Amino acid sequence: MNYSWEYAIAADKKAKNKLSNMIFTYQSMPQHAIGDMEFHEDFNAYTEISSRTLNEIALTDEVLINPYYRYREIFEGLLKSTEAEINDEVKSIVFNTAFHLLAYVDRKVGMTKTEYLLQSIIQDIKDGAYGSLNAEIFTHDLTTEQQHVVAKSIHTLCQIGEELHVFTNLVSIFFPDAYIFASFDNKCEIVCYLRKQQEQMSKRIIGFILAIFLPLGYTSRIYWDKSFGIIESGNMMNIGHIIIY
Image 1 (spheres, one colour):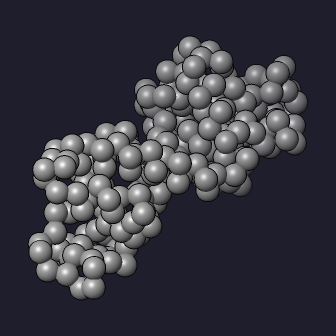
Image 2 (cartoon, rainbow, N blue to C red; image 1 turned 180 degrees about the horizontal axis):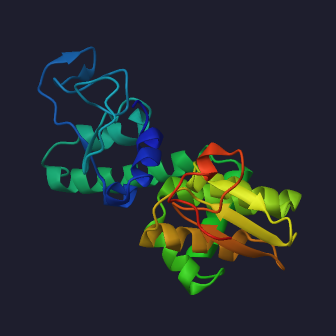
């Protein structure tokens, strides 16, 4: 990683590495310099995130920053002040607080209008706008990436209004091996053969998808690792794995 905004995005994807939990530190450098810049063995003059490995992606609770890479004018006076003027503890606190603000603003600058809308949808779901149970499942059972997929699906639904398309696409994302059928006898019935063992979390997730994305007036049938038989379809005609429709 190079910039702090890259680290901020990566941190937000990990529940235990949220940006708010990070501590940004500047390196106390030895008294030798090249030009007017001092260096440390972990200090990299060519990246904002300082590490021994150029493309290191491991997230840690403490992030070592090169404060001179983009924000020299902001931090130079603070970091060059003597102990008599500002002690090291105060410097660390001020630097950490200021860099949290800079990283937050830096990330927001790169967000598009659509991304702001998606973040608003995510917050609405978490706040219970789609029901308290759905809020619980969304918050605790889905990863950050999955939450973003759900928000994008809601946004797409508002844009194009193709409920069945959005629904089937989302089911295929969460259950890649699933087969989705339209009932021949009942045009308003959707049959999902998930091809997955029935587990509590999977039940909660498919219930969440059905509650929010199944079109009004439609009903559904869910099959897990066993399904009804379809003649001339090898995957659907396994002896001992066929059940009655």
